[in-house]
Amino acid sequence: MPMRPLPVDPVPCRVVVCRDCCCGSPKVVGVDHAEQTAHLGRDAPVRISECLDVCERANVIVVQPSAAGRAAGARPVWLGLVNDPAATEDIAAWVRAGGPGVAVRPDVVDLYAFTPPRRARSGPSRDSR
Image (cartoon, rainbow, N blue to C red; front, side, top):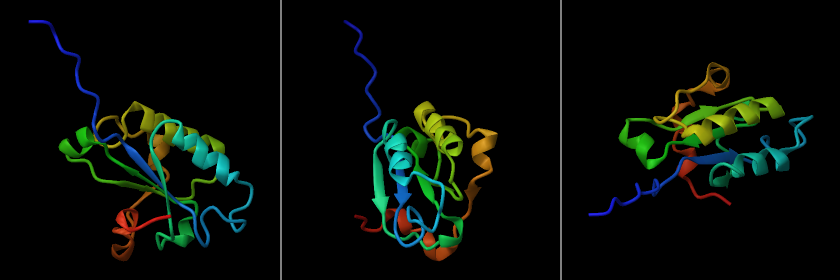
């Protein structure tokens, strides 16, 4: 019997980018918001969200685990103050490697990680633009 190729993860790691009142706006200076979103989109599906209610941490990015990551027990990882190209690249590299539950989160990405307040935790699953 011939060997079958391993299936591709049916639900890849996904990225939610807040782009509303503060995140992605001129309030966060010195960031090319469109380039940040495009850069993250090269490595994973990106969804633009309305306000995630953690404006004090603008720009906010949530990395959702792939099906394999969820099977390993991973939960979404909230990242805040992602306001420079190096931070965006560090996150993109982690996503390329598999993200939560699949790849070890680099120490540098840990600097951006935070636990959102209870009211914001459902944010990435809300309807988005």
